[in-house]
Length: 453
Ligand code: ADP
Image 1 (cartoon, rainbow, N blue to C red):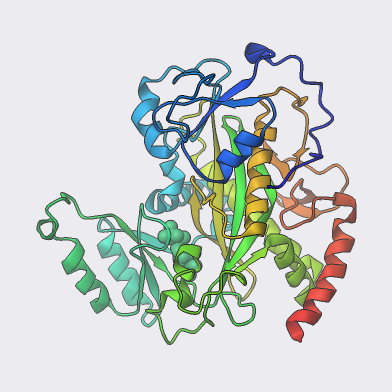
Image 2 (image 1 turned 45 degrees about the horizontal axis):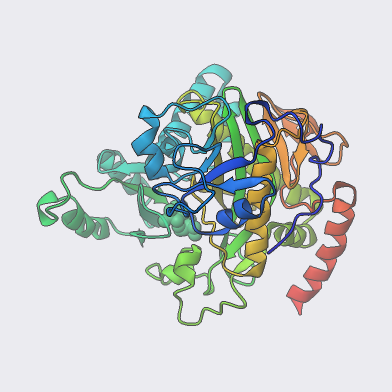
């Protein structure tokens, strides 16, 4: 199990004394998951597990507190939906998920909200500014927007579209198509509620323009998982974790076999079922490794633009639901963003998960997830160690605090609202800021050589 010995930002603390309503007693937590988050919580000094229905410790142990008596709850979305409206949260209690998180995490609603903010931006600030929203592929909700989709389809003959159930995950129910006939067959099966007695209304899908020219490394497609912590929607306060990973598909990319999920879907859940999948080799790169590769292959500037583009995606998408999400000071959300690069290095938003997988696929993956989760707890700071002015806590950098957050040391140039400035964003950078650019350059050279050989 990994141990975090020194957490940057966290040790400039004001001590462990004044914990507000929690006082000096242990922090009591509940957890409905059995994976890495439970390890993190159990290893945290001064934290004690409490039992109750829907928790990992559902058998009350001697010395454990009963249900309801908790300070922190890592709950699942279903539990929150069932209980939030009748629950009274006390001052000090913190719980995972905002009430209507699905506004951002359902594929159809995410696009609807983004389209609305793009329209509003165009109305108020003009076309140019609205172009900063051009990071999600053309998407329609089915069946409700079927006719608009058909019009669009006819305008672009020959292109590939991808169909995705709006509320499913892990690549389930997804397929690619080129001909309207393929979707007619699908329509027959899906839109007739009588074929499935349990389904009263047809399942909502999104149909989306397929990105036919993904950026390839070693001939394979990948997407990037980015961890984002939102601690408040009003004002919007956003932390970005500097590590994450790129998930590669197992087979070389080709448009000849659009029915082959191993080529086109980068989900680990899909890839690990491939007959030639090698669990030791895996199919992941750390985001640092990706940044190094892009730096070496293109330039530091090109790599920086990619990651600035991802920052833009994060902020714009959160702003698109800022007025819709029911803000609650007790709630927080840890999102897993999925971003795809095209061959021109443009980042595209594929989807946002409110329950990103916390099950590790190997040791490195475990260490990464352990680190992210431990730092989530460090940022939430139930121990009351922080001053509240930190811009960095562990691997998290504060990128938005009711407005863009600027870095202290001027190490990363970027453009916020058109003017050149320095953003406090270090996605894909190593944890040590001073050394990071030099390290990226040196490692990039080595990586370039190894990929070439
Ligand atoms: P799920 O929630 O089932 O994981 P996603 O929307 O994340 O659904 O899609 C699964 C995978 O399919 C993505 O990780 C990506 O590899 C691929 N994919 C999804 N949408 C597109 C798209 N528009 N263009 C190219 N690839 C896509």
